[in-house]
Image (cartoon, rainbow, N blue to C red; front, side):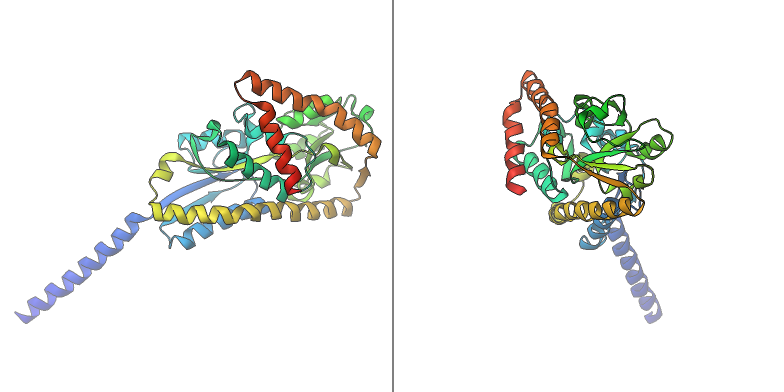
Length: 338
């Protein structure tokens, strides 16, 4: 009888332990994360670090599997992939789906950005101020933006506006409008296709942040860097989650994730600036030439691209927004954070 009783208690303990473990396993929420950045890029490493931090601070209750380098969805499909549930989380540029994010596009205007820290503060301030309906079909984790987007060219130096004539240059979203205003011909290409396009002569240059010279190895295929800082733009990025997946996460774990999001915003801004320094050093090491614009030439470029801002305001007004209010807010925050 005692032997049977012993077996009964052992059986009960084993069954209870298995039930307890299975309950823990059942509570694990598994998510996937799609990013267009290659795994070696600093912004990709930060995304991976975010995944690791979520797992750590939720004690493994939320586990995020990371897919960099467009292995889950292409850059142009990233946002739709999150909305549809093809991916649970995504990071990409707003500009890759031009026209879909009209309010957030104001951040990318060529207003003379000076750093990633500044641009990242601006884009998050704009989102918090306007909470645009264009992002309501996902749960926004956080936003960030790169440093000054300036001109890089291969084979031909650009020192004046006249030098743009006849040049095909990679541009997307607002940067494409800027290139047209300056006299160039914009060609829409996602960043992963730019290296070969420059190498093959399909395009002769591009507007991009200096970090790209090393982060995407673009310094190997360009010869000149024109410091077009008077009209420097930024490209803003989203990190968003599928709404249904977000709803499945318990409130206490949501709070943990949102706290991590707040911590990651300045990390991205700083990383953009540090990588700009590395990109400039890499470009110079390869023999690239840096061209400074004179004050008078910089003023000419500013005058040339002014209609880009005016066009944005007019378009927004026609679509029921207060375009000037949005642009004025971006300008004010840019001046404040510089």
